[in-house]
Length: 345
Ligand code: 5GP
Image 1 (tube, protein in one colour):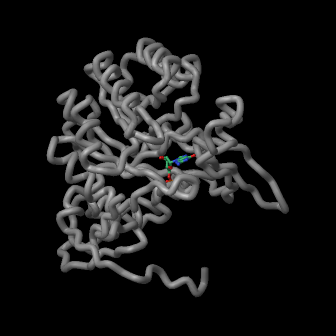
Image 2 (tube, rainbow, N blue to C red):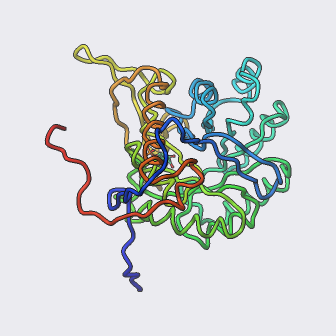
């Protein structure tokens, strides 16, 4: 047994130190980024914030709205090939730059992925998503997917350490998804004791990925626009959001009316709710590692997006970054023992 004693940090452990800035207003800040993708030698340009591939967040409706604002959606893996066909037939032009098709690592998943890709050859992004990206089976599946789809951009995860980021990039991923345990409806840390504080995971994984010319997505743990900024400041190329985008018109999940108030259901992809819905129940060899919650209904996601983008722009002005790309270079984090004043919350 061994203990690593250097302290790993989460979003709650730091704040940005303000810096002198010549920017007059947050309206001057450009949040668009352009990335060169390592295996396909193509580029992607957009605002690098993504809806998570959860069936309550990564919906076609979410994708249509987020694409309009130049953001990205990892579409959840439970849509059928038929539903994909219908969506693509009526989707706005250029949608393929703003969505990924998600897949698990089973035989049936691979078959469905091939069908969806054959029927919609313009789709550019594939997201291979497993809870534990350290398994050999996952790396084998990633290699197989890279061989089959040499011209597609592959997102793969989740992992939290530099050496595994490198292994996934070398096995065929262009972008690696980083995060084990920080999610708002995740119970992995409680059920298994496994995890890695997200800010440190980002710093270490970004360093590994950028050394090879790859990118990372910080996935999970953002509860406020300030957290999204901290993820970018730490070096994340993309930030993926679940809970912050739940509860809207565009989100999935049952609508619940109680005592004159409206809520929408939001649940983890390995919660018993999701497993009952998609896998016919919780297999008896595994515990559910996700929660089911009800979030207050929040209307159109557009308002939440303005709040998030406004927050990130404002962070950039506080540290003097004219573009999102400059934010990491302009970031000095201070370690703190307090966050916001909670007297009136
Ligand atoms: P959030 O933005 O809500 O904090 O985190 C979203 C992320 O939580 C997802 O993108 C995914 O990586 C993770 N997640 C979603 N469902 C589950 C689950 O059931 N169990 C675990 N361990 N993580 C989940």
